[in-house]
Image (tube, rainbow, N blue to C red):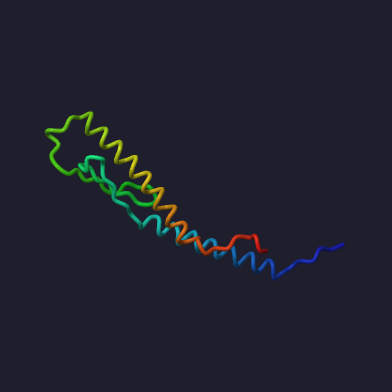
Length: 108
């Protein structure tokens, strides 16, 4: 007994796949282009990070001569941790914006 092939269903599946691929490309582009700036708790260090998690800039505010090395290291760790969290948050927000209107397969 031969199985019937539902060509309409296959065409819809192909269209959905292409749509998902287009959304994914849009998401990847947005993640690479979107950046967030975060500061250390004492505001002396600023890190700019993309939503992809790439640190693109580090700025030091104030002089370094009078800084205690251990204190500076704590501030640097804190701001890098905050940058990673900010990148994750930005990725989630962009994901919601790009894929928010996408319907799942539940209705098919």
